[in-house]
Length: 222
Image (tube, rainbow, N blue to C red; front, top):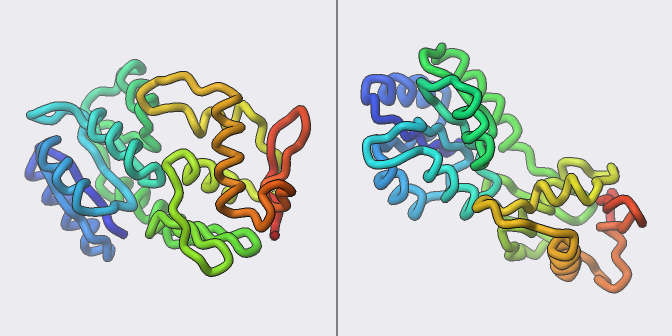
């Protein structure tokens, strides 16, 4: 698994990198937000481990960039702060998990390996495949380009195939990382655009079904 590690404590950075490398992961390291930005511009990472406090900024801003460009990347924050406000801020910008310093490196490795097991699984439904490693969708053998919101929507649909997802649940998926309001019209537009890319006949969708008055459901096949 490709991992971005952003930590300004070089002793801790080296220790984490060493442990994760021994587990078979490829780790790219930076001790600054600017260095992380360079790595993010040149690579796609499956997971990012971010220190909140950095000498030239905040890991929160690094997370915002990741959520903007790579919505499927798993983000875990490392921080010496454990107040409720700091934890909420981390989750608000898109964090998936949190570890408060000091922490056990063995616990961190276990969390990373758990993410790796999910990353290496390619969700599929009928003739639709979403490859979280490459961050692409393959539809009936053809690789298609998806926008950030389409990728988020297809991912949540495929993780909950066969289940009815309410509009509220899907709106949370589309909620803009910069805090912009997303309404039901925006959701409907994104659903329509996604259908145009993955359905055989978008005017009569067989894959993404509308459950009237509730939300939508991804069926098992096309």
